Length: 103
Image 1 (cartoon, one colour):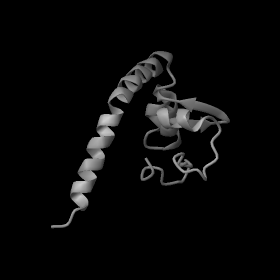
Image 2 (cartoon, helix red, strand yellow):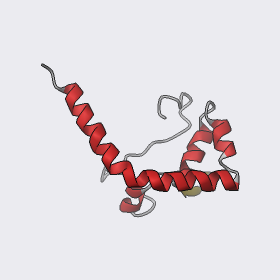
Image 3 (cartoon, helix red, strand yellow):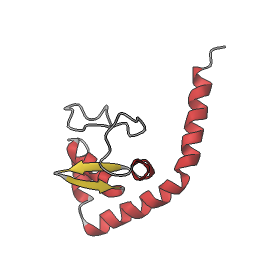
Image 4 (cartoon, one colour):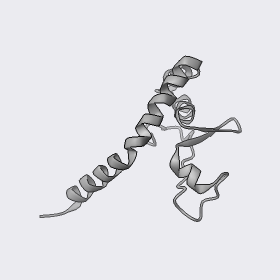
């Protein structure tokens, strides 16, 4: 997403760092994706949709996600994704470690 945000419209925060001020519990921030849009803290699919609206290329998708039915479907998918996120993270870390090992 950072690469798509060419205008720098999004401020990304590393909430794993103790130096980062967190507006809510750090554990809650790490459990789900969060974003702030117009002073409102959003989480899950709504947060992704807010991020999409900030990126011109993805803005149409973010606008469609404002529809109640579309937003509910995206949240349903996001909750299911969260079940598999730890497995995907382990796989990604393992793959990254394998590619950084020099023969």
